[in-house]
Length: 164
Image 1 (tube, rainbow, N blue to C red):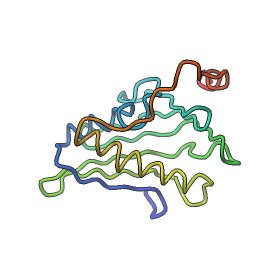
Image 2: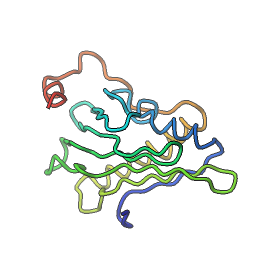
Image 3: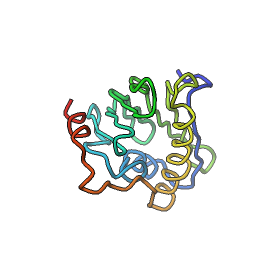
Image 4: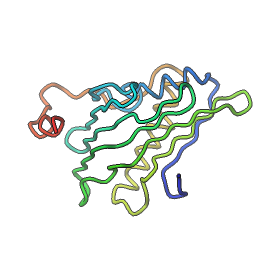
């Protein structure tokens, strides 16, 4: 269950639950174009990396059409923390409901707590991705994901990590 320390954000939007649900599943449209794998299929793992700064593998573990998505971080590596593996076994939870004539999205990064070295940086990043990029993707059809990296940036470390 969520504790008050977990990162959370709430969106209220005019678009319907289905549009909202479909937008959330489209991680390439709001988080990063640098994602490999399926982000919308139950029990599938996808790979995200931002250069060699942040690499993670995330699995969709629960899907309730138009109402809820739960992703589990199955592997993670930061290059800016002492504990490179912060986030492992945390969950990204999206709950969609109706509030009046609006669609409500409650996002919780369960397990992202103040004890983590990345807490402040991750909170700021989630604010941008959820409150701006995802919100814009849902409401306008265009998010602001990290752009796909140039082909020359594909280090051996990223290739090796992704294969594990």
